[in-house]
Length: 468
Image 1 (tube, helix red, strand yellow):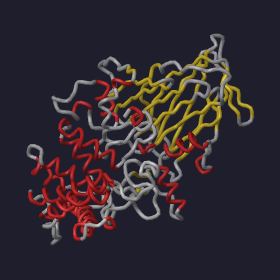
Image 2: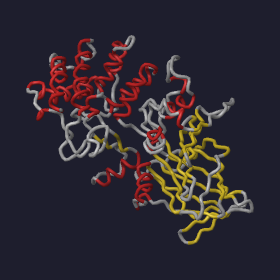
Image 3: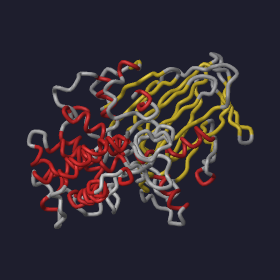
Image 4: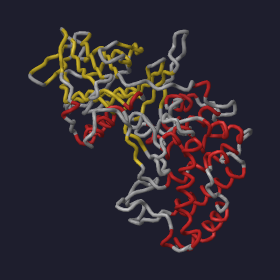
C-alpha cells in the first residue's frame, strides 16, 4: 500500500507509517490544517492543506532531479524537469512553505510558495509541464507534451515565469522561479540553466499555482471515531485524501476518484469512519453511475477532460469523462451500502442518504436502482442455467476488467474468480438485505427483487465447480 500512496496513495493506507520516514510539523496558533512530510528513498514529499489550498510537493533527488506540485483541485499540477546531471544532486527540505492565492483574468489561482535549494553547481531545465496530472504523467513515462498545453517561458527581471490559461479559458497554471543566494539563471534560446552561487548551492523561491476549483476538505478531526488507531501519519494521509465531494485514490499521480479504491477502502475502514466520510464515499460512487448502472472506475476531469472532449470533436469544456471498463466494481456498491445499513442506526442513515440528489437532480436511490437492475440482470442467466458460459466475463475486446488490471494477472482468461465466486453473490445478498430493510422501497418502481437471495444461493453453490 506504500506504492499505492506515493505512486497511488491508497486512502486505506493505515499500514504506511511503518514503511516510510515521516516528519510531522509542530502546530502553532497559525499552523495550517495539515502540514506533514514523507521521505521514501530519494523522493521527499511535503503535504500542505489550509483553506482553499491543498498541495503535495514532490522533490526527486539523484542524477535526474525534478520537482512536482500536485493539487487535488482538478487533479492538476505543475512541474519542472531537469536534464541528467553529471553526479547525483540532493534537494534540501523546503523552507518557509505557505499558502498563496493570486488573482488572474480567469479567476483565482491557489497554491504554495517556498524556498528551495539543492547541492549542485549547475542544472539545465529540460521541460516545464503544467496542467492536469495526466499530462504530467504522460511526460514522466513518454517524455512528450501535447502541443496544445505547452507553456512558454517569460521573464520578469531575474524571475522565470511559466503561466497559461486552461484550454477552456477557465482558471490556469503558473510557476514562478526567483533565483536567490547568488544563483543565476541563464536563458539561451529555449534552454534555461541555473548556476550556483559561491556556496555551490542552487537556491530559489518557488511559487506554484493552479486555478482549478478547490475541493471541500473533511477535517482531520472529523473523520475517525475515538477507537481508531492513534497513528498520526496515517491520519494525516487519510485526511489529505478526503473531501466532501469524493475520496481520492492517491497522490501525486492519482489525486481523484477511483471507484474500486473508494469502495474497498470504505468497507475496510467503515468501523472507525465517521458517517460523513462513509456517506461522502458512497455518494461519490452513486453520483458517477452510468445510465445503465455500471460503477465508474476512474474519471478524467479538469483540463484532461477538456482534451478528451476536443479529441472527440466536442467543445473545449471540462465535462468529466468516466471509464466503466472494469467489471468487478459493479458488484461492490450494494455490499458496501448493505454494510453501512447494518451499522448502528444504519437503516435510517441509508434511507436518508438515498434521498440526497446527484448534480443532475436524480436521487441517489434512483441512481442505485440502475446498478441493482444491472446486477440482477447480469446474474439471472447463470442463476437460471448454472453453466460456465453464463458466468460474468470481462468486457468484449478488453484484456483487463478487475482489480489485477493485467492480462497476465488473469492468466489470459476472461472469467475472474473473485467476480463470479465472491462479488456477484455478495451483491445479490446485499440487495436482498437492503430490500428486506425497506430502504429500496421508494425507488424500486415495481422492479422485482424477490429472487435476489435465491440467485445468490445458486451462485454460491454452483460457481466453484465451473471454475475448477
